Image (cartoon, rainbow, N blue to C red; front, side):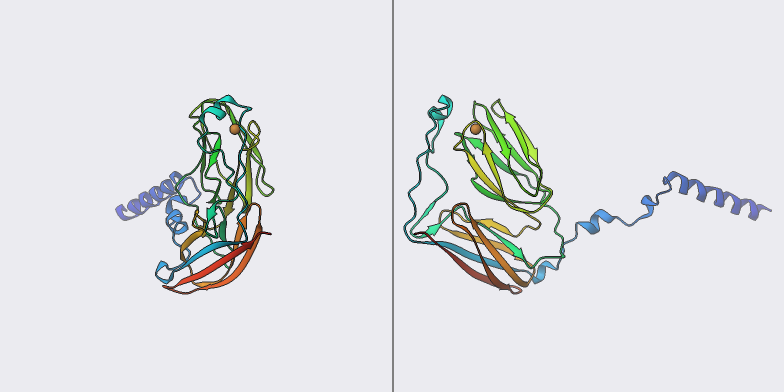
Length: 255
Ligand SMILES: [Cu+2]
């Protein structure tokens, strides 16, 4: 008799425990977030890409930007030269490089660090940059004047956000890969920037020395694309091997 009572008690407690779990069984599932955050490949097998972007022909002279329409800009700007062509000695900066093909079917969690796009001296800094799908972009107005950040994507949602007060910030993420999403300021026609939105973390922007590095890739065969805002795109096939560094160079020709 005592034994039957004990079993009945156990049975009731079991049903209560199930009811407290909300009936969705979530409390009993093995921790899915940990599994989702696991790397898509064994990092011990990773390789790297190192490269440079050259320009063949004379680098077009940087255009001087006229900022007289806003006295705050005219007085505060420290850089009034266009960022379209930067570099020197045959090396081309502000070129966006990314893995275009070869990572299909693999998923990479969005990077948790925030990328900042600053409006300072009535310019965007950086002028060309990349983010992962789902990674936060923080847009900052460091100027004591009105800017409006106007993104004009084709694959993502357009947005247009005024920032009338200095030090205002605004955060945004992008849902779909898109190379490139242009930004402009509708107040200051000379302000523009470009973000490459990529589904993985394997991208870079060349510095003024034209150099770039993309590290810790899964070994494999890839198509790498180089994008420049005035000179278009180029692709190359490369193979990344475990522990190796694949070297690649692109040359854009100007007439
Ligand atoms: Cu502006």
